Image (cartoon, rainbow, N blue to C red):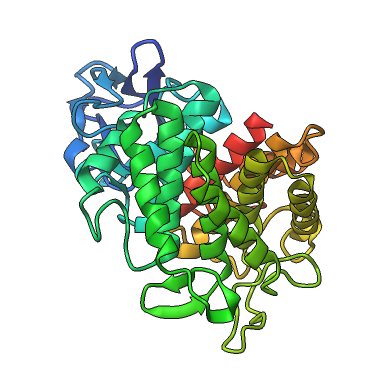
Length: 432
């Protein structure tokens, strides 16, 4: 990676075997400065790693280089990135290369995206950058899924790190007043249990499902309400409820309780009216218990697919997979959701920190799980198309992804939703 400054050529060099890098400047004069910056949050800040190895071109030379520095700091700050910077002796401007890192833990689209996502994991809080609660559950799920799919175990430390630092937060056991938040965390701990076999993660998932069950009410004939204090019945909460209960049944020998809850949840959901005439799912029900006509957010189209794949595993009921195919066919062929053939969130913005920035990741994760449950893998081509588009149009030099898979590349200053969404996409495509 290189840059130019007043006729000088500045380069960043990275050695994959050594997991180290250095900077150099050529075509300059004595007194020109060169150094490295090192960032542990994907190039967003580098205050603690600025001007590493600052050195100057010696008298009689036209080029010079810094010492070598580690890219990562596993014991403290975590996953790093480097850039080289230089200042000409006779000019005030500074030039820097782009950010880059070695190829360790980045040998494929998904592992590179996972490594960049882990640049945003905060070792102090056990959450991802901006400390989003439910989005953090999705980001952790994407990292865990990647470890399972690729066999790369480098970031397994985030599982216990997240759990230990947050298990007593809010209402404990990753429960809070938003029942959909609780469902997301329950599924994250199902994924963690599948990878590690640690029973405490399964116990927490059970606590989360039981917490959600307390808010199954008779309003609109059933269903879990969105918030402990708000009677609104919406799609995402109940999709998560179905998937979490079915997943628990599939992992608890002899269970009947969670299976019954999952079946009851699906029976209520499919008759609730939230699935519209085009087989897309609207946000929820109005005060008259009718479809409220609110947007068909992508995540509402995807989570139900993962839920039905899990429910089919539990029951063997072919009608469940038939229903899932109808829903998946509708969302993958919708021009509204896929303008030009590439998935785009409803009202998609340029940020990565809003709730909506995480929605597409949840969609492709659910679609990928359904696809894996179907012998003919009918959605592999769709997932590959999305993966190719995002990789070509939404990626920077660190494999950090912006919100628009069809482009243009926008790299917001904060937020991890876009990054976990891209990782979810590559996980699903590679698993297919």
